[in-house]
Length: 524
Image (cartoon, rainbow, N blue to C red; front, top):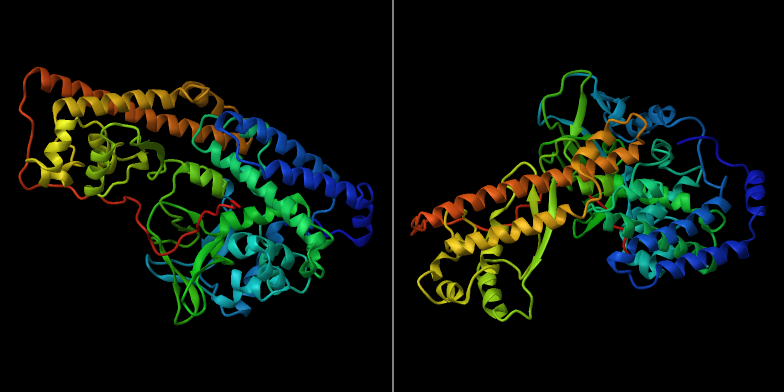
């Protein structure tokens, strides 16, 4: 990570500026501000600005108190590899290399075939919630309600305790971690402002609020709880420390089975977490028999090429918020659209029954996709029911169409011309309203991205909002073209297409795959 750890003398000099009472008062104010009822959407930004100012006051008082290591991050990579080899890991097929904008990753030192196993990490090397429970942090984990409920938070504090221990088994791994991250927790206020109007903004603001609240809560806990007496965090626990630990876990953690295989737990997986993301399939799993994490190559990899893994079917909003990067040409990118049937609607009961038969909820967050037909079968089926008249509902519930419920997601077979026109008109209006949430145009975003001086954080924010607009514009254009065809068919008196036996299965489009770096929400 960065420079040398502070000496005891420099720590005393840093803390002398702020008395323990003054710091506790600041932290208590922060906790109170973050612990109230979540604000309404119109007040979220104002609250964020207030919380951010309190956090900056605390950070200023704590300047010079954060634990750092000798040298730069890459100075510790050889120690990481040597430590891994000492613990049974074969590292003969790769080395750690710098890949420019992608950062550090694994580079093949020989040809590796697709599906060839190239990396196995034994459980003893993993930092897990279980290892936290068996560490100096254990007594507090067993007594505090938040730590009991939130394994990701336990893992973050475990990471900090081990970082402070010069004899820690995991020190070679911890020293190899980044000194800071590109998650929104590290954004300046003006960089966060660039996300206003995007679908990521609420997650970004709540993430900062939750992290600030947790920091304040644990700062007080470490000063007052008997089980925290022997913890290194009692004497030195800065906001920057906690932000770093939260980001380390959020960007790198995964889920593995517990040793007995009965439950799932969170883990940090050394070396494997050096791999960068590319499109593909999940190629990592956990072998309970050999008690190790195993990874096979996603594709053929020639000597000197980068070895990638697939992080999962994440949108760019998820990548920016939880991983700290924007992935160009993301085939899994999407924009959320939340829809529901109002209980006050006169036909609510009939529509709810119709949706239940189709296997759909009365309220759901759907997705508009970047590289597919924007409107999925699930969304189409929901909207057809949403727009049904009483007569159409009766036909599908008890009439001649009762067996056609599973055709509702098939774009070839409308309920009626009027129903189809109504739903696409509704979508056209909805897409237009969503586009109005953005403060800039796609042209303005494109011009901004050409600015060489744009910070990496700002660039990711602008790329994200531009990508969201492009999905919405594509969806709008698709909807308008569909409306034009429908109007023509209706005007010409075209017969309604029908099918006696064809249908389409309505299922969840998000495939659950064996193992990928999971996003973590630090919410409580």
